[in-house]
Image (tube, rainbow, N blue to C red):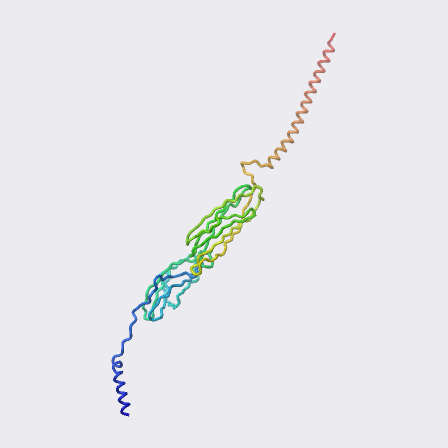
Amino acid sequence: MGQTRQLLLLLVLLLLPSIIMPARATTDTIPPVWPVNSKITALSITSSSIYISWTPATDDSGTVNYRVYENGEWNGMYTLSTSYGRSSLAPNETITFLIVAEDPSHNNSTGPSATFTTAPSQCTGYEACLVSFFTFSPTSAQGGIMTATSKVGNEGQDSIRVDSMTATSDIGAYSLTSGAPFLLRVGEIGTNGLAISVPADETVGTHLLLFTISWEYNSTVSGWRQGDSIVQNSAFSVTSGQTPNQPNSAALKSLIGSLASYLYLAVGVYLALVSLAVGLVIRNDRRKRSALVNHSP
């Protein structure tokens, strides 16, 4: 029994310093660390939404929370995820994102930032956006020239490679590119023109024209991907090949026919007058002869 008391007394003596002077808790003052070249990447951009992800930060606590600032404003929410999305945005709306990492001890460090803009209203789908403006001569005469111009612009967030642009109608198929794809970086515009010869015997009236663009975009996630083809149906008119400086063959034929009928009439009148004159000459000559005979001895 005495031995047990001695052991308990020894244990109390050993624990007494920690009871009297408890150890201070270690204070964490080290903020999360961002890797070199940390960045924000756009996962998806449409005309009404932006979804992003970012390089994760690390902390000695093993836990990192993130604050996402939009145009300098924080919504008061934390996230453990390294991705974030906004929807119900307006077309052509620009947002600058800034990511701040924070550990459980409220140490924080500022991370990467990036600016993204939603696509124009005519662009849907992924972050790639190719806008096309195709114009052409609405009317062309037989044997004339119809001009077509294609203006394309990259209004998305990825580089775009235009593979082909073609104009097809019942008078033929034509290419507005040389066969080699051309690159459009973000914000760039490309223009190509085409002159289409309208056959001299082409049917007068309305003709359909089909304009098609085949293109690709360089996705930040999966490399070059095929974009949805742009197709535009239009109509143009072919008019008669006659111009104000050219004679109208149909009218000319009609005029010649009319003149011919008048010519026949004129010839008939002329012949009648000639016959009448000859008759008068003959009659006058007979009278003279008769008078000479009557006065002869």
